[in-house]
Picture 1 (cartoon, rainbow, N blue to C red):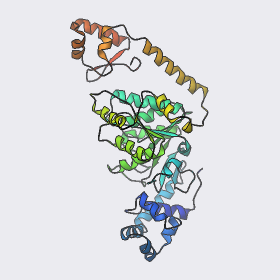
Picture 2: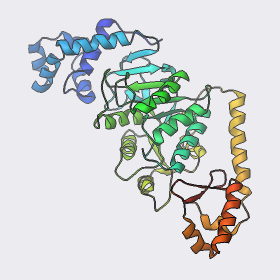
Picture 3: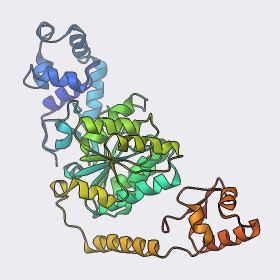
Picture 4: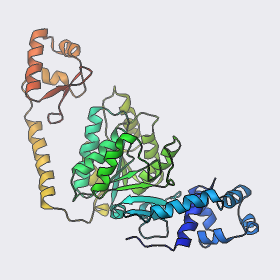
Length: 388
């Protein structure tokens, strides 16, 4: 159970967080002049005017009105339910990694297992319209990291975020688990079709986390604020796929400003979604090809201090050995090298191999029946993950 505050003190923190025009940085500056939020709440208008700018003073006085008071009562009632918490920076359960950032949230709404906030965490972010390979990379990296005790943090968005959460869940109940940071209130799941994923996260001792008050809908300007929490919770950020102008690159930039490590998975030079990771690598992000590259870079300083089941360890080892064995046993086909590592059309393969169409079709059918290649919905051919 979290260290609890008095109702009066928690009310004061909530009121501060709901003050119009008062962001986290301004709130921290305000608190440098007062002993605590309760002292701010007890100030007269004249005392406030003597210490803070006019606009902030007006916001603080407006927050004492009926509308904000109703929101506060709703939040206090919400926090009475099992596994639902309101965290403030003066509580031990408030995540230490986040507390020391310049714009740490004034209040956090948490739903699920608070222990996840005490684990070393790694964020995985990327494109909403990720490719099939990108989704597999996100899931595989998340699963391996979670099995090694790292909590996987992401934003519950479509694409890479959802794949990362699912990969962490696949690692099982004894793993590092996952935290989903929301761009909405804690009582809203966005996108709606991720409601089942959110339930799975909660049912496997994961956590939903947000700084937005209950009932807050999804808005475009909420997601950069969410992204800073994703970066702030983590020791490092892995970017899987991203366009040059994207929220994922913003998260990576925020991570750099917070002195976090940034990792990027390279991709095809012809894919627009590779430009983001490639740009990060050119700017100094660490190129990674497997989860172990991240673990080696972060080193023992952040290694999770948990004991996991022998079954989970054996499962991880078996997966690695199977992958190595599969990589050595490449198919004996003249088409194999011509396929390469990027999705390719049959016309391109025919140009590369100079095969007659009928012979090419036989070779492709043989590779497909052996599970060496697969056909994408757009008709392109790609090596399967176990062979690439």
